[in-house]
Image 1 (cartoon, rainbow, N blue to C red):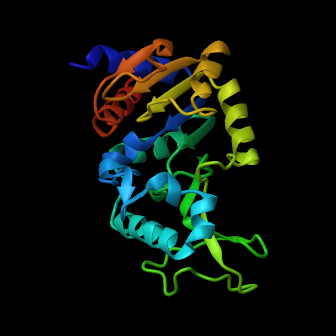
Image 2 (cartoon, rainbow, N blue to C red; image 1 turned 90 degrees about the horizontal axis):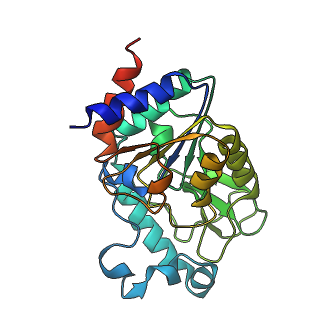
Length: 247
């Protein structure tokens, strides 16, 4: 059913040297990652936006950490799916390759991807509110909530981007640089509605890159797509990857 689109996507990638994969929640949903908002967008009767914000954290850091502890527990048993593995494998195929993700779950790295540009941070890192040090924290559950910094003793927070906060400048700069010079942008599992990340597709297309969209439904940026693969990325990307092996 997808044979022509898969063949066309492989054709575009086969001749490319500079490729960027831009991923969103859809690629992780196929691994069973629960959606961020959950049913009704509430958690313990409180809107998620109030928990995932600096205001919510300073008002009740214990409640916010309980929310993130639940997310960390849910993610602890989740494994990368075939889409993650294909995207990680492509770093060995293309001379210049980057994975840019809106996800905080670390599944790209778990699949072997290196140098992933995490626009929204990582749920597996924490940042000290005192000395500012950031470190990986994989303990589930945490021994203390809220956790304290081993260096200075101050409280730490999840190293993720909350509502009302700016995306990390260095990561954004690297993402923009990669996307501006890429020859093919592969957009996977994102609705592409949140800026500035939503502008990536438009930037790549304006710079002359070919755009491959892999999504069950058309996103708001679908009109930029040169190839549209409609269906689960975990099924479709392995088909594209197999075609790349065919000379």
